[in-house]
Length: 385
Length: 129
View 1 (cartoon, rainbow over the protein chains, first blue to last red):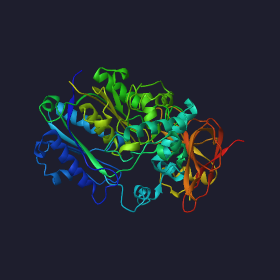
View 2: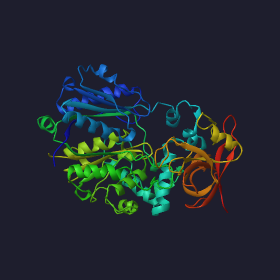
View 3: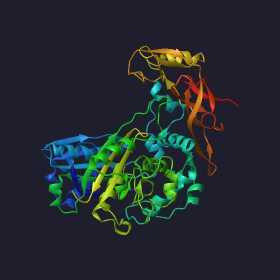
View 4: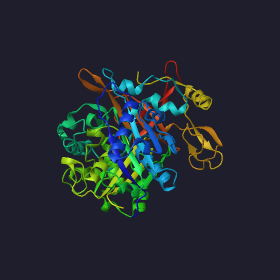
């Protein structure tokens, strides 16, 4: 196993209902604190990758605000929920090619406004719908919940997955979040609570859906050689993968049945020279409970169609054989797109996760997922080269 | 309103002209003869741009669906159904359904069109009893 790079710094702002600050304010703080965390100065950066969230409130102007000069790599990255992994992979490739040595990757968003319904902020100004590409929206496919609900429904009809299976995912995530000081939802949750919560879009109830958060998370990517001499315990990147399946709009489509995690995971496992059995813990992108469940199947942590049973067994929960979403994920922790999974993985691999620290933390799998299962990224992290 | 007004563009004009007459058009590839969904700009099988509008039988089976809810008197109620129907010719279509339609996977279904104020006719789901 050889490392393609390392994550030397992690910066996180306050996240959740944090008002009065813009996405750029959050991004500035996250990058600055990620550099401090690594034992680097802002002037050590020679690369900046920026991923704006739903409000599109941050872009490469951030480099001017941070006073970054003579960057050799700079880009706005938009692969939606897979962006965190895509940014880290792009940074690793640039570092390996000698284009850059020290790259900050940042996600920031500010969807929450005091006194304004989040749905209204997300919907924004209604655009005029035009052409057949907008037909699904016109007939009712509006917002992320409906699309993922249709995917989940197909999995249910083919594999017998149930809402009670989704409840197990939500309960497992919450059981980790109660131990995470960064998490927004720290009150214990039961299967009953899940089943009695209001319906959003069948089959999804409230606790099947992720949170919404203001805030930012940044990481500093550098070579493993350089990271060894910096301030934090070593976190190397030993496997990388992406998959953008683009489901055909006909009977061949595996929409709702398998995801980009299959191919992205295969690439990352092969690159790292490991298998699903070797993974100590996993941080899976969880915009919805179903996303966690189907990702666990597609990464080979359990057989296809047995995701519900896997979570019901407690395997993914505290004390289980394969801890998953050990900070509560986006369901109960904080909604920073793929940076949610990545930030928690970095803390765990370093051994800095406090009360929720997993016992074996030498090899982690981190996933990102965007669109409606359109874009997927995988990172495998290790605590050695 | 659960259906939103949709405007035609140059590509969709033949589709909506036919929809106004109650006919569902899909695309057939002049190269490999296979069918693609109406929004395709390349054949979904061979990537050819030699696509021609042909009439679908308008029948197929339900692949999946969701029922979004709206808040109502402290609880929620089904607002409508949105479903994917696989036409007998192969392509998938998103269709609108009534909130009380009961669905199972594989259910036989038909697609018709309903008029929408200030917009083009939109496809709605009918299920065989």
